[in-house]
Amino acid sequence: MSTIKVNTIDTQSGTTVTIPTGKVLTITDNSGWSIAGTVVSSTATELNILDGKAFLDEDAMGTNSATGIASQQSIKAYIDNLYQYGTIYTDAGAMVTTSTAGAEAATNEYATNDVNWDYYAFDTGSTEEQVQFKIVMPENWDRSTVKAKFYWSSASGSSAGDTCEWAIKATALANDDAIDASWGTEQVITDTVLAGTNGDLHITSATPAITVGGSPALGEMVTFEVNRNTAGTDNMAEDAWLFGVLIQIKMTNTVSAW
Image (cartoon, rainbow, N blue to C red; front, side, top):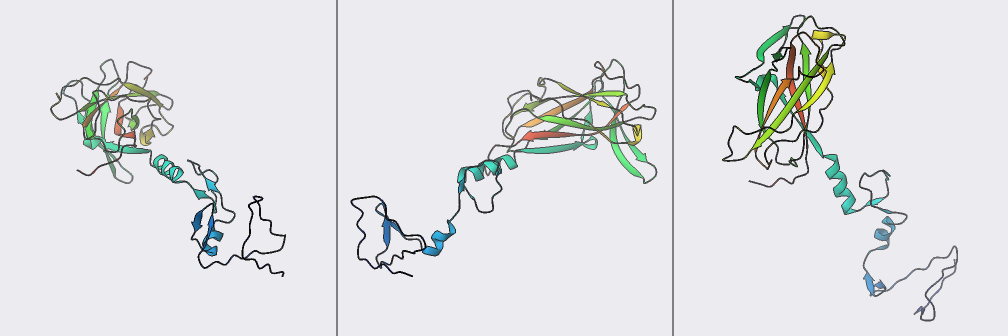
């Protein structure tokens, strides 16, 4: 190996110092060395860590690189998106029937394994029956629209292919608000009786986005009302049994200590 020993490399007449292929330039200077006037304090080992690495600004981390270096912004965006949505389940046992046109509360035992589930029975017909439940929404809720899925089955006698419609609406109340407040816009989802009819659990698709009435803010109480939408395409002659409701919310708000 050739050795080049110099006291100074003067590049005032140009901008490039070229090291021949296969040769190594070792710089030893007890006072350190600098690039464009900035002292480089990293060791060779530390600098080698960056050798061949690329800085990636990918909010979804799509490259999935084992060597790429992510930006702070992309890491934050990835985490924010990862925990963007959450769900809250409310069982029929935590609901109340309404005094006006309320659904009937009951418990059914599925005999083979003695499985007991609470439910509310909603009649067919022109009078739409309902139940209500209330929850304080998580503090990281972004206070925008929500969606719902219904967990249900039917009374005996239903036929596969029968149609059942569920509807839901909500309103939010703050401290000192009147409890008897107007509702937000109702949303409806249609489901079909499965081959197992009343012996099977049915889970609907998600409703369209539900706008919560009032002016939702952190820490408010949100009341939901569920009814069987018999005025629509519902053609099931038997009672519809509601086991529970799953609410999906978007979570983007930062939670602060009380």
